[in-house]
Image 1 (cartoon, one colour):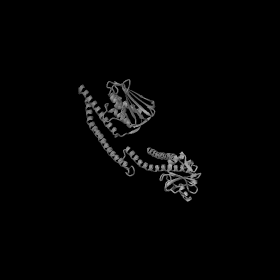
Image 2 (cartoon, one colour; image 1 turned 90 degrees about the vertical axis):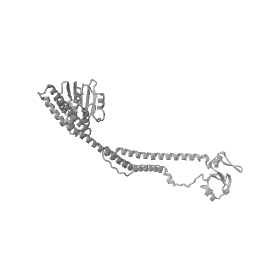
Image 3 (cartoon, helix red, strand yellow; image 1 turned 120 degrees about the vertical axis):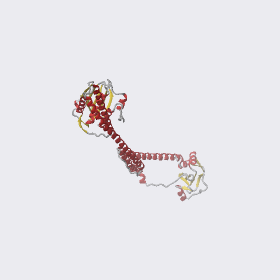
Image 4 (cartoon, one colour; image 1 turned 45 degrees about the vertical axis):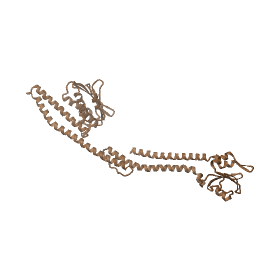
Length: 452
């Protein structure tokens, strides 16, 4: 909505700016036109200058060079009338004009035309000088204005310009509001599409075509979303079914292998083989559980059972379960829990977070069969918990490190197994981050960041 208001403000501002530019341009054009008119009808070509250049020498009238230039440039003919209306001097006088004029006739053409010739007159020492322009060259009109109006011209002109500008802004606002309402509908529709909601906009108005396209796009996205949900549900259901079907016979294999492992009548090599069968079966069971959990987390089908909990006891419990499970002596675990995290709780799914910590420790054990030293640190940094699990083992390969630190969790089974992918998925649903890195002194480190 803020962006729409911003667009409307810019639209109105642009309209006002265009109106101001047009007004300035018109004033400039009027100014230049008046200047050009003034140059064309300049001072040198005024009838008064011709009158000054018309001098009587003896019984003859002569024109000065300046008056002749003005005569040839602007006027077609000229004549000088005495007080009785008789012609004293003339130049290029048309044949259809009279040689004598009465006072009413002089009064009639003085201001307008003489036989369609536009004329100008000027008081000469010997009478009245009449200068005629070519027919059709000058348009004369009688423009009169009350004096009180002319006295207020300097006030009225700025007022009229201001009213014109205000009218332009109001018109822009009126049309802009209409456009704004149409755009707001489209913006609401786009927001609904972003929330994966169905959009059905009215197809009328100036943006009706866009509304129709938006409705069609929304319908298509809804269909695709429905198809994707069906596919994801089918895939997750299939994996969950396979996992359930595998677990039942696998439990039987593990049970019988455990019985054979404890059967004293069986030879030592036979009990050793039974032990291997049990351990590998347990590994298959863990892989199946990982696959099922990763699938549910990937498609947001794993329900979260969040509650307030302390992280330090959670880490101790995972470590105790690990040690009670028979951790070989070639592995050592050092735990450092900062006292500042002791009483601060976190909102999370305890079962999933335990699984994340377990997977990190298990990753160090599984990828370092020759043994390693594992170090776990938990501390607080500003408004986050930092949980670090590091070892001095073989570290990550370049390919695995690049894959693990990708912004998006890649689909499929990564080269480093599902364990660390599940860690990333669990921390992601808790709005935290994970960083994997190799240590300069050897080994690797996983750093979990969780909001307090």
